[in-house]
Length: 273
Ligand code: SAM
Image (cartoon, rainbow, N blue to C red):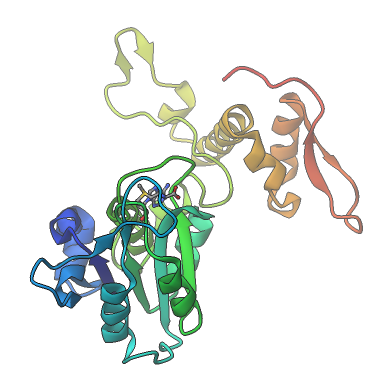
């Protein structure tokens, strides 16, 4: 996968050269290019911002450097971008970033990140982009940070770790929170007892089927307690009889039939974690 990041703070992306993603970059699994937006300015102060029309607090990013930078990366002035490209624009008004979106982006051969600063980017840049390339505006969540770089870091890491060969043991991607719409349950390592707190017996039993079932039950319990919204969204076809039994104890049941589209509903108050 090729990743281009446009930013006025190229050093902000340095962590992408560390750890597992850093190794993926070194090994060529991720072809990373970080660009300084100011390289596309034309004045001696390398200006990228200006005051907003209509007044108001703060500065906005001017369209010209963005236009020139995106032209350079997307194949010429106004050119339609390659079908293999997706432009990712971090913004608090974007689609909430999720594991599902990370999975979708991991199948795109080239991602171009446009990191805003100040009060954001002149809207015409987004409108122009939308007419020539697939664009996804992404929000990290319902809060505001100072720039898109932190979002680019999070999205690149979440996406790159899904690429074949980036995580040593691909199995770990299957059994983790959000991979199947559930949260992962609690996990333990050595020693078997610490500060008077023992590890659950089943994990020391060597019985893999029971361990698997216990993990699944804990995953369902944690999801029911902490993120009931995830259970409401789950496809009942992904649940077996044992799952439904645990969920029943937690006050959840299937409502509706296959024709009407069955779904999980809570019919009792939530149980404490
Ligand atoms: N004025 C903008 C608004 O109210 O929507 C906020 C601008 S914010 C201070 C500057 C930049 O930080 C944004 O252009 C975006 O790139 C990034 N940013 C801030 N919060 C974000 C979030 N929740 N998710 C993704 N990017 C965010």
